[in-house]
Image (tube, rainbow, N blue to C red):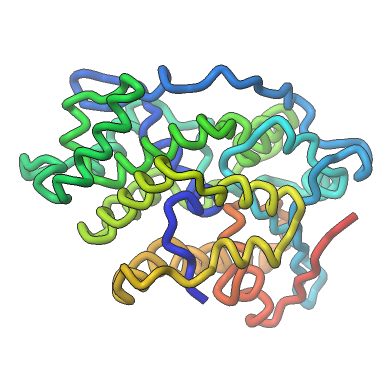
Length: 333
């Protein structure tokens, strides 16, 4: 089962897709910033993100509990990396599982990242040979991407030194904000904030450098395709983003599978599809399943929260653990 090559679907897959452009502008290091494109949409007070009972919640996201033969348990929660006020409060069954866990495990602890580390990681997305983005993509695509940024008053010539995946991230961040979805209302960041309040340990499964490296390692052909996808999504009336968020809120596994794993159009080669899937899901899912398996072996009841796309499908964490002989049950209340 192949993950659909659609950059907008990465809100369920890669948390640093949204962070790639948020370090703040620094003229000495050519770090772009997007602070001035955030909309004035209302945000929610999510200081208490869990409801007291399931009936009070407007969402019912997917949660699984994995067991080994000795009775050790880990919780598996598929996150969405952007959000809106209507996601909260999360239902009580999520809160109960979170409270029972000894630590929160996430892709990357974005709360503990400083500007210096962000600058170093962002260098991975720079061309190191002195070339510019317009040397690597079509003139038409470059002009379309510049037009989008110029229309919002955020284009800067320094952006030309960055690879297409940075431009993809920037345009997608603008798109999410335009549609009313905000990274500070994402599930991951609010679980981390809650863990801090409760003095619950936060464990990183990956790292910021790992996720930037994934983006930077994409071939030129794949990066151009992804940027084109972002430009097309920004300029269209496509409702995929809204459908993904609604399916996540409703815990609609069937709809999520359809949106995330629908076959790609024939305008992309099987080789690029395989490259994308290896980097974004297959290899990472195995590492995440390994992490869950170690937690079970160590009898650590962790609340593992990673992008929903990593949980689902025949190559997802849930299936991988089942295939390794663990019992995995869906939790609903």
